[in-house]
Image 1 (cartoon, rainbow, N blue to C red):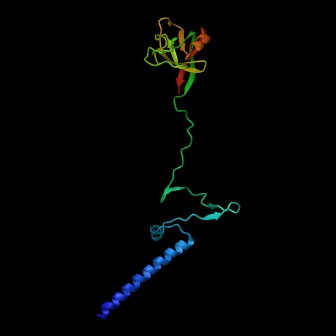
Image 2: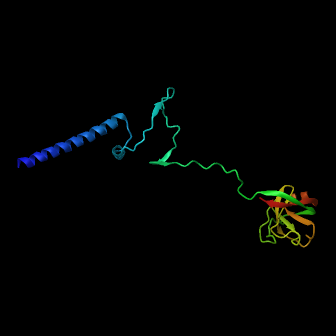
Length: 189
């Protein structure tokens, strides 16, 4: 029986020493101001961030200037994407001249009602063009005065080298009147 109680005393003493050692380690961390959790302390995987106190402001500053920020243990935060230098849509370039056309203007009705074009779209200023579809088919893009227009409409009086440019208001259309304009093919890059 004495042998059995001796083993209990040794086991109890070892358990007590382990508890004492763990509590001393925890107190040392608290005293040192460590932010390690118990799991971190046991695994030893915590990276400390050296800090200094700025002389003028008294605010702590991190010396971790050259390291990449982490979003988790061992996972580096990806750098933000650089700003896009390419335009969102297609890039157009002025192509060969298609000739000189007689250009007129059209606009919404006096009531402000906007009808649909021959192609079924709603006309837009600096975009919609009415042309002879045998010469410039629906969907053709042309450049007039460095503005890209799309042939979306036609009309009974629009034959041959005649075009009708859509304007947002009656005043703009009247101001444009009738002009001679050179049309250029559009090259999509």
